[in-house]
Length: 270
Image (cartoon, one colour):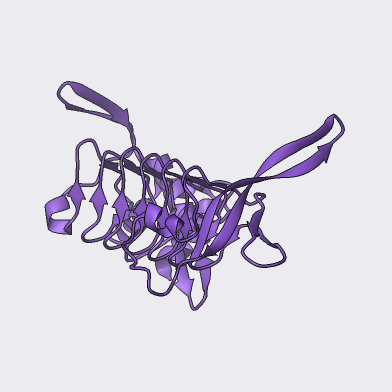
């Protein structure tokens, strides 16, 4: 509570950051997010609550961190943010050139292929961040999630009131998918390759006799592929991208099944 009050005060008056106790409060919050004891967004029952003051602390951290140069021959870096370390002690497999910034939490048995995890993100136990996948600032990734090659999970720091992307436990996100703007992918959902989800993307369940439309949320255990629908514009009718829910993961499906196996149940190749 004291940290929250100090952060809120410094957010209203940046001059306070010149005082040691406020700067130290900011650094303490980043240490807590790095260790997973504080999160930008936390599950509460069936919902998620965004902790705005933690996002404020992350933004304030950029203000108090000096630029610095370090080298890993023959590479050179010049930045404000240091990187995570001690992967062996954390129980994390980090393959060169995996990069995770200090202030991001990475749980035990996570595998980081050559990938990027930004400050404020939370990657829970047993998840895979595959080659060239990115986990943006403050994104929340659950347990046993597979982010396939080239997946882009959007980050969010500003505007402050914006919600982070949330990918819940057991999800499989196919190659080159993009999930941004605070979209929530609920437990054990499967996204086929190249699905793009924003807050304005229509997510249409076509598995029944009538379409059911969602926005900003993929229901649990849904199997989703890219789609399109016709929309009339002043210049004529054109196809607009959407996402199609073609069914649900079967209860008998192993949570570690491949994307192709999940899609094969519905005779769809992606």
